[in-house]
Length: 439
Image (cartoon, rainbow, N blue to C red; front, side, top):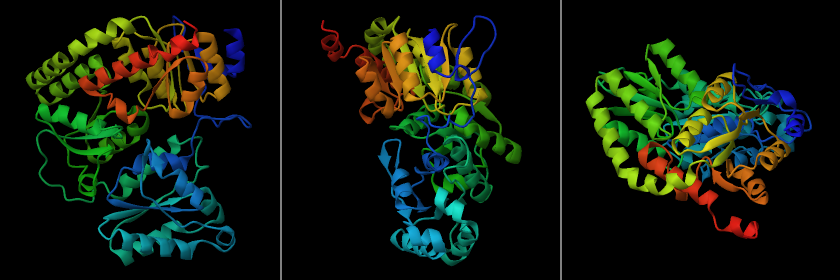
């Protein structure tokens, strides 16, 4: 593996030792001239806020930025654009922004609030977007929220995640009246409703007698957001993107949070038991666990024997990397290398604890890095974003998208693990690989 280590820039790729923790260099700008898998801060903010469909979303910049931010998690969302041109960059885009916000409100009169996103060009020319938002808020009679997320703000889209959560925390959360709090009221932080995940999580908790007030940001409406400070507990699902909001709500409103995950039966059971113990609902948690696992056991008996001993490689955004490794452990599949586009030290510490000694961990891999890792390690299945699919197929390696395709269904909860096992099985045993190998 010496050649692979050299090609992957050494410090960005590490191999877990038997004793001690060694982590890749992370939270750094991408190497100049290198083709990176990262997105920008603007797209990170869109990743967070796009599901909030009772809001107007105005992108202040060239139309290309709006086009880029209109598709998030494989879904198309409505956005409005000021569509700046050369003369607007020279003379300023103030008038265009005011006109666009007014037109958007006329098209969506029932929208309850509005986001205005900065982009690289408008940040560089210095349009005073924040003051324009304050003026339009008085004119329209609804919150007009400035999202200060030009693409160059930070090293990757992870910077935009925090900006988006800060916008919600500072402008919306806490604006609702603090009514009587239900005994078992919770928020879920860090779930983005990929292929219906939010519905699954809400259903599991409701079976235990727990009421979900708001899901950030997969299923969050205006009323839920402004009342998000009126709960007993926050459940942190994605620790990479949601940690800031969970800690801020604890500091500002005294709301504790629990770190839980629902990828794989082991972690789903542990999460439900942890929540049950917090609320004194242990019996209800055990009932949900028994029912859920019994329903999927026949399917698991079919898939798991064929997946035991298989080898997997992972590369995607930092979300749930350690959790996915543990879910693969549940199916007897070993991870040979894993990496992230924008993981931080906390993410990699958790990942290092989850993998076996000898596993490679890489940050901000280029396509060339991934190609050499896949070619030398030859996993049975590769899990990554849609951009990595074609590289995997060219090398004759089965590919399992993560986040998952719509046809696969959600991967969380008990039925979700069966969906996940089925997707991995289909990727490994697709008949096309026999043809590719000449069998």
